Length: 199
Length: 199
Image (spheres, chains in turn yellow, purple):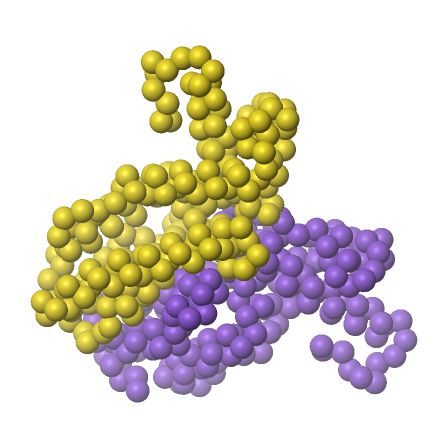
């Protein structure tokens, strides 16, 4: 939890409760989806009254916003840096890490699927998130293409959409059955096919 | 609707109502998920009372079973036949067709994500479905491998998991934003990379 141990008083108490509610939101939205979960479920899980929870999160939408912000914060903390090949190793490392604590993976899987409906409160969030991912990935692959390091003539945009799709789809298969696929090995095989300079 | 026009009487009426309820279930489960939808929502959509609907589907679980059976029926009706290359063309044709009527694509996307939780009533259904898909795909790719038609040394099981993941992930991106990806083109690019004999 991002709450300093030395913090005291009402502020620390509020921050701690918000953090616990967000954790419960990650778990519930990742299990039954945004539509399937209620604020009462979250309050029950925290052992507090709905009215007490609504003091911090007046409705389910405000908890969803906080959950997505926390998701972004944790994802940003694990962002890869360095050269393109390092970026690939960092991506593989992130995939490995996410399997140790699949809560965020479930959240991503369930909420992004639900959010395909235009009425979903996180629809614009996920549309934007995927547009940014595609743009960042395409820039990285374009650098490799310009250096002649792509084995197959392929548009960087196309390769990026395929990589993002592959990761999402493999995570779905793994969440359904942990023994069914080796996410990291498959992503490495895919990338090696297109980038032979990869170890 | 699979109801013969000449059918009359109470049986025909029941079959027609069941078919309408299943269509409503496909749409609702595909939008708000199984957890987010209620039998009352389905009854409202059909303009009938909850009690009336419960005469045909006593609970949400029984409607889910009927929805998944209908999903399988429609998927089986579009199953590819013929040689491996024909099978690839048939897969691409199916992907093209499913974009014209994305209801079943949304259902697959939302329910499979929700069903990653072991408590979900369709968890075993989706685990089994993916195991069968992987096994059928691997058998087809193994034939190509035995004939030396795979460009890259890759396990047929691995290639199958990747192809299934790619299709699921591209459909998610397309459902979020129809202009973002060309599902058929990306899948064709992926397959051509591994099977150079493909046109």
